[in-house]
Length: 221
Length: 221
Image (cartoon, rainbow over all chains, first blue to last red; front, side, top):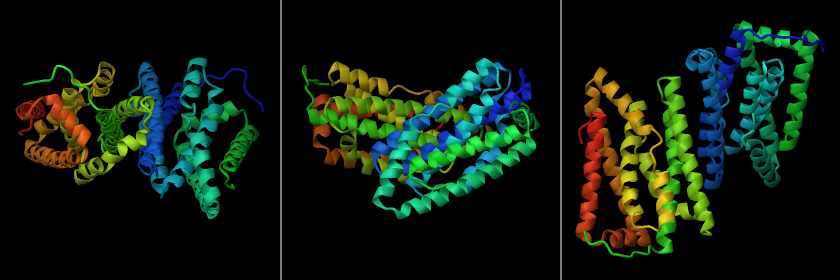
């Protein structure tokens, strides 16, 4: 992996990164709040609602940082509204378990991806990005709920595995739209990685982590 | 108003009160999160999402207190799920402004009502109740949005005034169901008020505050 000794991401790339993260948090809030409504128990509903609240706290920190950079958060988020909304609309969970799997799989890949990018950023931005990616407790909760449900009905594993594969396909498709339109962000990933082989290696690491996450859920990838 | 010098609410009444407040916060979270989705701007969406998060923080404090009293929050909330869900299902906002008016009108009456009850409680429970009733900033936000919208289209005032009257009617109807079924809570209100004339006075104060709130929104009651 040939990583440049010094890398100064363009201001456009930083704003794009904070913008996509901010809109991601805002949609994560709405998604988890909607999932909360599907919870089979009031305890499950409250647990999801608390996680949704953590996401909006993260949103606030990203919006504040954009403000400090002199950028209106709404303007920074605007390019990512279409692709993220399209992803979520094409993958509406039919039930509680599909919602948990979706949040776990999608947030897991997104967190791994942004953590890789964070390594190329200036220290304060890196610290902010790593902070807002911190898991709100959803992962352990989702693993417990999904494994318990599969233990009680093993046909669920096949259905949820298929669902996760569809999620990854839809996410990749929307990510390609973003990459094609946001030159500064794409440039950051190419320059940060170093070369095409390094980008390949990055996607290899994301895939490995995804497979491990699916295994922890009791699902096949 | 003949208020008894000493009043010791029954443990059942306290658990009922904390239970209805807790379920109220949990549904407020879901309601505000759904309203957030109706926001015409991303800034409005984020603002509502933050208010929803404040409600879930309040929920956590009430659930913790119930736990300290040795009561499972789910058990304490259970009697109020039916009436509160019925109220919300019969008053689903059709748009952003209806959502804002509903939250403002309903939360306003509820907060005034519980504030009156809080006066009869032991100091720690009173402090908790008053704390969780604290406005998350929704009131000022709703007043600003509704007044701005009415200024731009004065036919809205008639429609939203009618909507608010329907809300109050549905809320009273569900409150009567609760009063008929929760003896300890009803007993607390009767004993706390002192006599029937005092209960009448209490409802008079709630009505006056409601009328004032409607006027601030630019609506007629």
